[in-house]
Image (cartoon, rainbow, N blue to C red; front, side, top):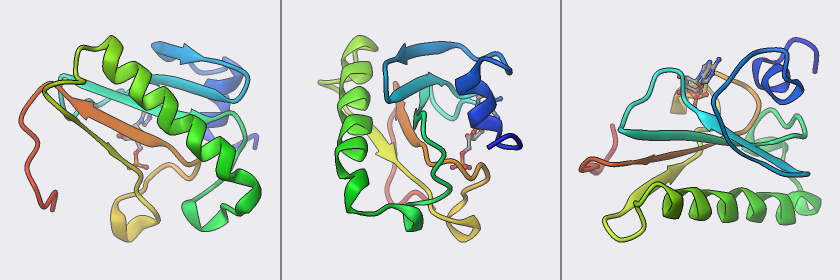
Length: 114
Ligand code: AMP
């Protein structure tokens, strides 16, 4: 998608601090971090929201979580804990319409998130 911010990051047209990339998934640090670790984990494929997922995407969604687990380990978060969240649509706070997992950690995380 030519007008998608995260597609432009995947393409290398907009700079980002990458922490992981493979054939299906790219991860980079959030530009406005909400915790000491705040990484966004995205598919290379442009999928606007969770509502656009179908059964064929199940391995890809699993890959997003596998990358989240790996980065959490790399960042030293595995034992203390971390949060992985994906917002769906504006009412839940989604502002970039290319699905992404937020990986947050490095400080106490309260519940409910608000
Ligand atoms: P959401 O509100 O769930 O759609 O999350 C979008 C996230 O993208 C926000 O946390 C933003 O801070 C982050 N963001 C926006 N632009 C960039 C960018 N150029 N590089 C890295 N993160 C970004």
